[in-house]
Image (cartoon, one colour):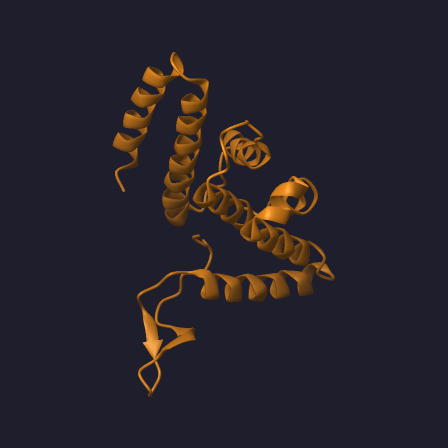
Length: 171
């Protein structure tokens, strides 16, 4: 969780590889984007502050990226979609994500479906509650937590959690 030192290390690596390989430079930029998402989400958990517009733009750019010989990394795509969902970028997820990405990445498709569902809910008051309920269930199902309650039979229950991890969904 030492984001400052990791960022410095990545910046130094980026400086070294920029001269030699445009592909490696892009890979480093992608990894730096992932680090920036983690950094912002860690800080947003405390402050709830909206991300800077350049970070949102870089996240969108990653999902739209089509660089030959540099495939999208699954973990980065997943984090980008979760990031956009967390910050209610529903319009982008439903209308602007490239179709080939939606067709080949089920995580992106799920993000698109969730965004479309939240966007299409009826009326402002009802939709807020319904969207919140939908989101809480998705976060509850998708969040990794070691705080699950166990049933009488000793198995982990997916529905009952001891702690609430609502609000920020991790991959």
